[in-house]
Image (cartoon, rainbow, N blue to C red; front, side, top):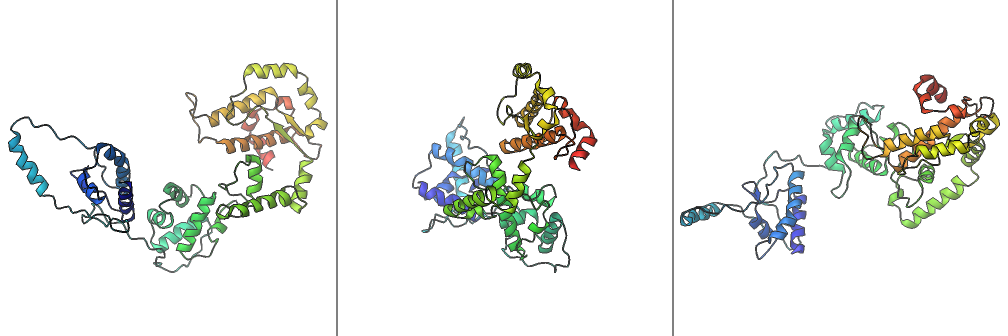
Length: 405
């Protein structure tokens, strides 16, 4: 029976047809005939098919089918009600077709309600010639959509395949200027739009801000987030579509030549690593519980003279552990930004994942390291004593201005 049901569901999607309905309910008799079932569908099979058919109806923006209800029991004179039931079945003119030999079900004769969707052409004709070349990515995308008469939904249907999970809200956010493509999947969609509008390859990519940023979404296996950020910058955009052996060859080359080789980039990276300045937060990681006051107090008691020693400029040129108070503040921040639900009375904009939290810890550690580094050393830091480092310093615009400058 599964071999008959699968082509039937595929035909509904291919021809964008609604399953047979009768009085707002799924017409199981017509569905069984279309699937080639010799006997009536069982109740268990109907329960399993109901969610999939409802999903197709929602996808077609049609009215949802109500749950199948048992017919009411007759209260009196059933012999009078039988002719009415027979007449109702005789008035039905629906004639669903069975699956063809190749497994595809022909479209139903009934016409679905609502306006017929506009047919999608892979290469539509422009409504007017291109006389402008907008500088920004958003303006260029909107301009060419208007030139070809595409709405965002028509463009989404034209460039996104049925088996892909690319969200239509992502495309809408590009058009509204809220986001820009940053992932490998997004750049694949961008190339399809360029091909649809017959633009030169890389037309939209050249208009994106932050050209030096690396893409995310490469299939890199179990590589750590820190190494992933260094490697992704040197990977080609079609890395995921390459054979496994070719991907392994590229990763080996990047590690051997770029990361640990003798190129100009590597020489710069090696020279910069000799002047290290950062504050480490060894007890604060993604997914771990925040540091307790007792553990921080014991650490402070065991290292009560560390703060005074760390104020020595000679010691501030390397990487040091955060003082207990700063470590507690960082732990509270990570807990707040990574927890599923916030504490009562607090609000936040977005949730940090594992890679984002690791990156934020690294960036904030560099910032606090620059603030603590000696102004007379190579780093040219701000000279804040380590014992006085706190997130409260970030309230003052002058601190940010110095760091950015």
